[in-house]
Image 1 (cartoon, rainbow over the protein chains, first blue to last red):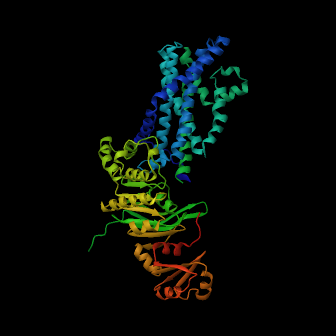
Image 2 (tube, chains in turn cyan, blue):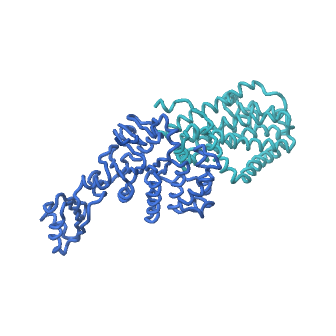
Image 3 (cartoon, rainbow over the protein chains, first blue to last red):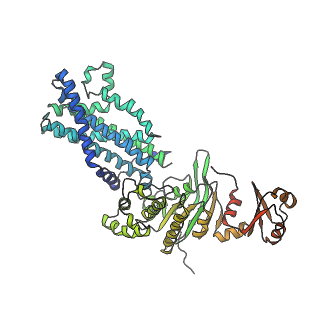
Length: 260
Length: 308
């Protein structure tokens, strides 16, 4: 079925679909933003003070500061993932919102591109929320943490794309458990969110080096703690490649699913 | 010589295969401007697949489709600018109000907010939902949702509407209301293509029908012509305790064709008088005599087996 493999046809027609999702979000914006702020703030405070009291310094900085960079990435990843998995699946499979849109002069390429960018936008808010907490708590100054903003966008793009593949394959909500168990949770534990990767045995360290969340944290951590990230281009490219390739695979799979 | 307008929808030799099953198996149809064209068929006949192909939502394995003289699926997106769709299952946006559903849907056509807003009062009136503009979708009845779906399909002021079983699942009141709206649209010169398995719907609305089974059109024409050409004009249904004896005694001798379905015998005849005279003295038989309907044609052509 070669027609499913044709490259994505991207256009500005995605915008009304993105806007549709934004309008739905706007209806519940206040609880959503509070959730973005409160949830990770509690997390950081709990772990930061609880563990931070025992650990004092990790990687040469207070544990709370160490945790902050990981949490920015982790929170962005989670937000993007939940949006394309649960909300995306609802729109595709349960509410048949995509079917309705496809009867208008839009294509599946437009719809999926809109979902990708919408989940990226939404995860930007989650990442920004952590950044605000970092600033308010004085864990880092504005300065180079501003570079985290474009990085958050790229992280969101990466995990939105990856999540869309799972959504495209999913027969039901239950299927998402596999992705969380086999991909998301391992990344949280292997990619340096809570502790430095060099604490892991060498085998796991080499696995970690390939995971997208590692690329994100390696870039984010120096930006929070001060100092220059190393091998910036490689890590940026890795995040972009994960996102873009996943988006293409998701598009092929979704075409096979809906346009057969 | 009269100028013949090209058909708005023109399908030639259309084929679509899923696995080993040819769901659409060489289909030809043409729908002209202002027509109401009905695609009838049992479940699984290929009606919905035909609509999806006509909209360019899936690629055919053979044949050609043109919609507004544009090739589909290649130019389907452009063709859909002038099309409205009422899907089989309501897929209104549950997160939005009635008005927001229309507004958001209009934007998918690239319409400006002001232009959509200007159309909304008329659409709400058409749907009989003027007073429910701010209602949430889950607060609407089934009939209201269908009417809103119909109004949503009109947001871009289309020339052609595809309706996939537009009244399935509605109560008789709601169904009549939809029919009335569809006749209004025909009065405005819109073209309708609908699938249905309600014979009454087809008979009331459609100028022209095609009966479809196993991916093919097996009969076509106006409802009256179909009845006239495929079936005897009178039907006598006979049932009751004595039906067994009756069949043994008379079989199909008193009519052109008799068919037994469970407890009931259907006698198809050009003239039912002799048959009715014979039936009258039988106390153990009940019967009714009626003119043949589209349903009789449908059952004759597609059989009485259940389709699941």
